[in-house]
Length: 489
Figure 1 (cartoon, helix red, strand yellow):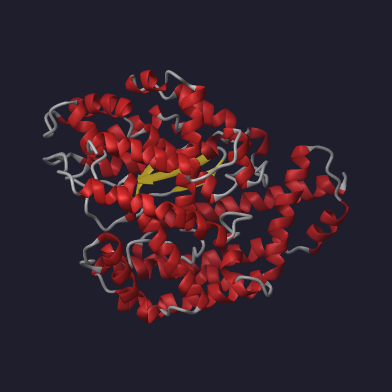
Figure 2 (tube, one colour; figure 1 turned 180 degrees about the vertical axis):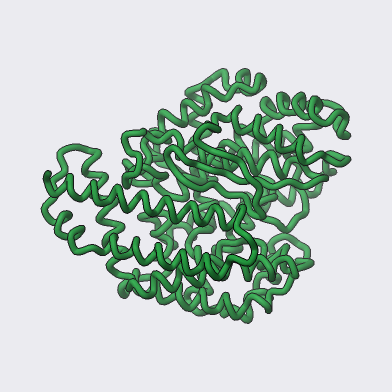
């Protein structure tokens, strides 16, 4: 056994334990009894302590110092393990365990505050989460920019300054297009009540249509839909609303994009540093292209219209043309996860700016709700009506995921680039989508991006797939063409 072999064998066990920790998180959001939160916090802290000890084991440093990479895969393995080791060495074990414990408990307290629309009830816990995450960020930054250090957890190599420049370039065109669209009459939406069992049945059909392997996954319900796991155990959740089946269907398609990325990674990378998605921005590119460019396309919604008529009968939409307009209509709304393609990024930019201010200390939690409400009204033109539609709507901050939000818009940008490349590679794409045939589209994504897992750096993963340098232009061009057509601008 060489140093490289010893290191990879040791890391495989660490990866397996991390998957177990992830399963605890899945259970917490889907099936865990309400009264189990405190105990689950202790469990999370215990397993995080074990993981931290393994990630900082002195042998890892020794193996890294002498291990030799003989090919591209081995080089990538060592790069990923070294990044994880360097990060873990900067964060004290006690702090890592305390963050795991506090954020686990915080999730339940946030959920209760959200149900009661009471941000004040959550603020004491949130202050503790923020204090711990600032401490962790300072340790990771080691004298550098704290927010950049946090961002690196989700999008290795990305810098806040670069994202600010990208988002600033997007904002004027998005705002102008939104204003033009909202000046037009809005198409009709669906009407009636949609049986939950029928929604979940069609949701499963959609998951399978987009390539989700149910023999290695499952679909459950959660307040906030998510995907969990990798390799041969990748689970997703969705949610239902009796008056809005699109909430269920497009949440499912979105999470299937994440899940298929994980399921389609080369099996040779299973339980290795390369066996998961390379970054959250790249991950989000998969969920967004599945949900939007494919799932909300004129061709695919024509097929979906027929399936909905089969499942629900007459639901207030006369034909495929009206259905396409209903699926893509631009609505006033508060919830990021329910936002249309046109306005979604504005929700993300709001959070990006506020969380940078929280981390820097320019904004404190006592002032956060007011700052959120002021910014929302300035960006969207109407006031937030309750905390669950505002500052309490997302689970990310309660569980300490600072630096995560900008990857959503970065993922949209990447999806725009991938869609443009896909259209060139599969010229008959619309014919396929109109038949509910996603094989060519998802196959192209699997072969050109998903199978590589963590083999390449995030931006290089996109660059290799599209054979060009990614920019925001394809996304903005796509949005302008789509919504100008829909609203006859």
